[in-house]
Length: 140
Image 1 (cartoon, rainbow, N blue to C red):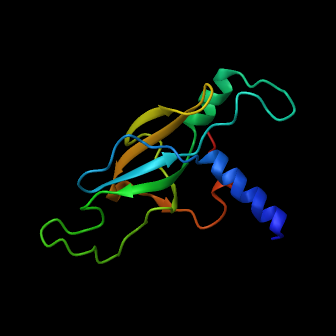
Image 2: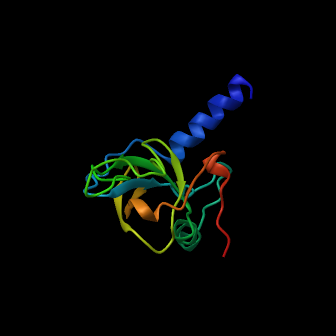
């Protein structure tokens, strides 16, 4: 990757996962995840995306970034030792998140934009993304 490509990739990551305070911390064996932001209301070429399009994208959004881990995440509850399998993910990792689980909420960010967060149980983490998290798409 060239320096300009890396800079563009970093900018795209920042746009998709802006630095926003979720207003909560995970308790117990929970994982706090910031979901990838939906596309902007207007594209760079000036095309306005209907709200239905953005809502569909949000509903099918399979990618999140780990923001925080609860104190019991990935530990045996009786001994507090790490799971035999190890820690499945850490803060900063990108995950494939389940569509129908977790507690979700939005935090206002910028002009007419929201950032969505979710908390899920540690055993509900389904996959860690090892490639570019911006290239992961869901299919209906």
